[in-house]
Length: 253
Image (cartoon, rainbow, N blue to C red):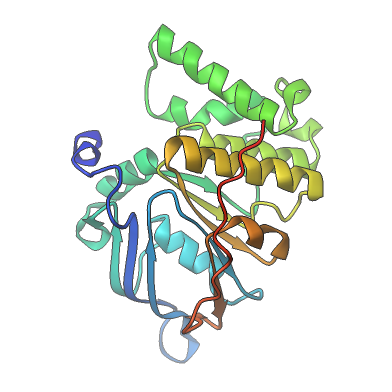
């Protein structure tokens, strides 16, 4: 999979391209039509927010972009690869190499410290040599420090509050230097100060690593930092997405 990714230009015109995507759950009279004819393109280093009420289809859309679920109809192209033509293992390899995830639940491993939880995606990729291990351990520590968790690195999730656990999960999503971050309401448990830390860190990754972000949110405090806001209602994207003002990336610290 790494060899395949190396053939994909880092600045491909679209990192994500959804064409006519529908998502159904169930069959017959019990069927739920979660997404209707979704067309969406995401460029490298772009940050978009998908907003809408609970049940509007935000999580279904993010799961399809993140290859955690499959579209019922339509095409899903990630890094110029047609997802429907890939094997389960191929999708898993692409997902692990390309994407960082932030879920609504932090989903931390309770028997691992905050620092170990952040390192987990790299551990799952296989054995690291001593130099790579030292580098990634430092990167994980730097991420936790930037998110205000310098003194909680050796704490277990059971000793952390909801805000701290969510910030650990955000650090875990970024530690692999992903091309794409898919984040389902990543700041819903954070106060204003922590939201600024997170959004500044996202902007830094856009600027330094070309990372793209898809955020689902009901929090308008994030809208000033994204390039586009898309309204999703009853599984349908607004015909004319609301464009947030494009601003220079504000990288602090």
